[in-house]
Amino acid sequence: MDAQTYLAALLAAPRPGTENVLAFYDHRVGHICTDASLLLLPLDDHICHRGDGLFESISYRQGRLFSFDQHLTRLKDGAAALKITPPCSWGEVRAIILDVARAAASEQGDMRVFLSRGPGGFGISPSECPQAGLYIVALRKNFAGEAFYEKGLTAFTSDIPPKQEYLARIKNTNYLPNVFMAMEARQKGMDVAVTFDENGIMGEAAVANVGLVDDQGRLLCPEIRRILPGTTMLAALELAARRVPDPLPVLERPIHKDEIATAREMLLFTSSTLCVGVTHFDGIPVGHGAWRGKPGPVAQWLHTALLDHLLQQGTPF
Image (cartoon, rainbow, N blue to C red; front, side, top):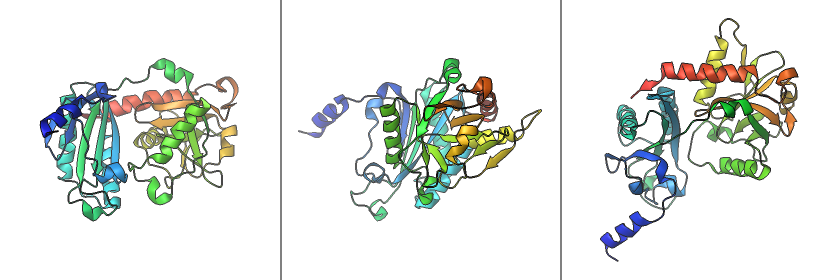
């Protein structure tokens, strides 16, 4: 068929999920578009067939991007590690993200920023790709209500090991281990899979960081070595350390799985849900006394404190 016939058929092909696409940008085209049927990625971009690329998920509420510059810093660090040079300056990347957020015409949602090796072939060598790709998408997002936080989450020991150290701190698009963890959770009828290494040391969840409030009331997070340094978790540690009138001692250290049994609380940190209490782990209630098997007071405080902090510090667009 001719190009016009093929293009018409392509645009008419099924595209599940397009109802959540508010606006997007492709650097090859150089324009922002709001017609989700045109959200198309070249198959020979190495982000597609090799997972050779990076991404960031940036929540926004009330017209403010949460931890925007922290996300960009992590993207820059990942680009340096993978030796990917953006197709424009970092200042332009920042400006385009804000432009896409404005074009989405919604006060709340999720931004997805993808920096790829770029199109150019189906081999494995980066030399095939003359220029990196930059794709930015604004997505409709309905954030969880109070009932979600009151109920909390269930978690379990994943069969998937933590990522190797040289990959763990890079937010790359090769997420197959994370996909397996999501499949585990669905098969078990639970919410969150958590990784542990060969020595029983805690890693992370599929799309979240995990922490504990130990039996002494200290906030613990795993060493940022075999986990992704989540922007929400880092903000939570900062807020806890300067809580008024009673700061929480904050420790970054190896956490053994056995410590969950004596912990006051188990916490999950993500960009969209901020902080949620884990009520049961491997089928056993978490916590002590009246809070056993329920989201604890630190989880409740951190959720509110994080939302207030991120709104105050958020980047307006």
